[in-house]
Amino acid sequence: MTQSDPVIEWLLDSDPSIRWQVMRDLIDAPERNWMAERAKVETEGWGARLLACRDEDGQWAGGAFLPAGFDPQEWREHGQPWTATTFSLSQLREFGLDPACEQARHAVELIGANARWEEGGQPFWQGEVEECINGRTVADGAYFGIDVSPIVDRLAGERLDDGGWNCERINGSHRSSFASTINVLEGLLEFEKSTGSTPRSRQARRTGEEFLLERHLFRRLGTGEPADERFLQFLHPNRWRYDILRALDYFRASTILTGAAPDRRLSEAIDHLRSRRLQDGRWPLDWSLPGRVWFEVDDGQGEPSRWITLRAMRVLRWWDAELSIDT
Image (cartoon, rainbow, N blue to C red; front, side):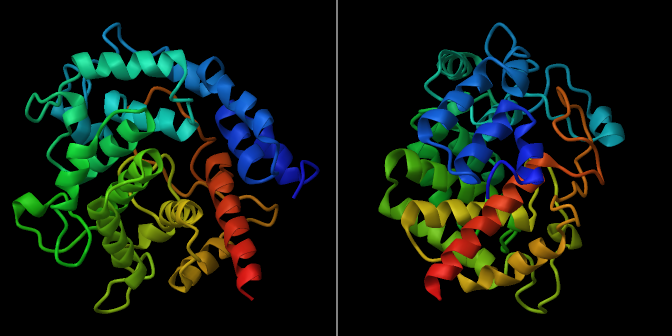
């Protein structure tokens, strides 16, 4: 796969946040080259634009989970707003902002000093109460060099009997949620990348993975029917929502970290991913979440998406390479 591929050329004709990942994950560019491209996220394009949206105190939109002065009617009429600190940090992590760069270090320091969760007023890096929020907080904190081990330990103790997590646990839910589970798994994986993890966190990650694998990433365990048809449609940005591409990208990263072979129970989701490829080699954005954003990073619902295409191509490249080794 080279730059002469028209899809690769289309991906490279984009923002630095996409280009550096294409260079690393799809065309095997030398590390010095993709690292130089990655450094541009701080100063150019979407990364620089999002960094410029910060308040003087380091937060985005004046809040941790919700913008300052948020009116619940906005959520009812226009959808959940995505401009506050937690979602902005997660998007910078997706862009690949170098956690060692000056603006990243300054941002996380100010957030630690000034951001408080609306739910209980606790400091941002101590976490909230919902598992899916805490999963993303762990992912962001570990990525940006914060000690989030107390939140990790709490999440490990909040697993349900089926091995996963559900944000409705405190309201009596006994069954894990696909969405809550993937949010926590991504956090635990980032923690493992950053710290080497703990036996307890690794065990929690294994049971969470098994929850998804037993269900082939999208099926109900009891009936075999799709748990939600939207799990098979591709979404970006995911925020807290689940789809099979998000899960496949997670399992790719997990096996690369651990050296494990891909689990064959992923094959049905892989086949579905292949089936959704357009004739020109790209993948479409099936839907996006309503609600306030700082700016758009896709060309619109139904249009080919660079983000979806990047993730799909690197998942299939990983799967096919591992399969050829195995056979």
